[in-house]
Image 1: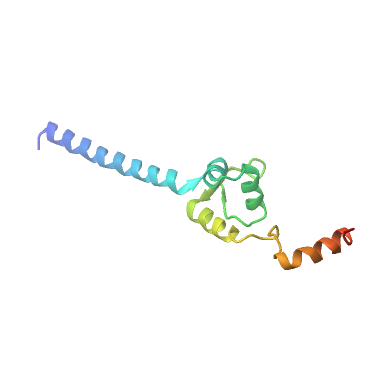
Image 2: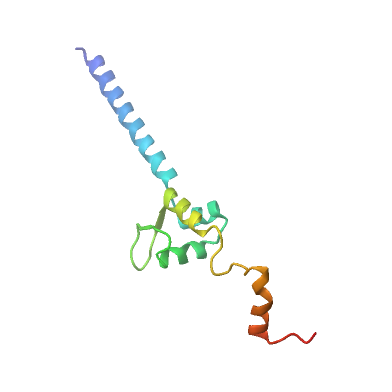
Amino acid sequence: MSDWQAIAEAVARIDRGVAKLLEVQERAVTEWLSVAQAAQVTGLSATTIRRAIGGRDLAASNMGSDQRPLWRIGRQELAEWMSKQKGGGTNAVPPKGELGSLIERYFGPSGD
């Protein structure tokens, strides 16, 4: 094997290694989101995302420290959390039949 062939093979191995690294990097970038990116994807505020993480409602990994957290949220976990949020929660409007009795209970009888 000539020196040129050896160099060409080494360069080919390096190219394959770089291609694999770029592929892994691309997957990592697309699979994990920062708090700001998660907020942008969901249309919610970054504060809402942080509260969900702090309340352990949304799974996230702290890549920083306790004093300065750097949260990363998996796309799958974010999608699952958003699915759980569907259908309302404690802020859901009560059925129309119950609305009148709730108004009287909290605000007293109406002066009609």
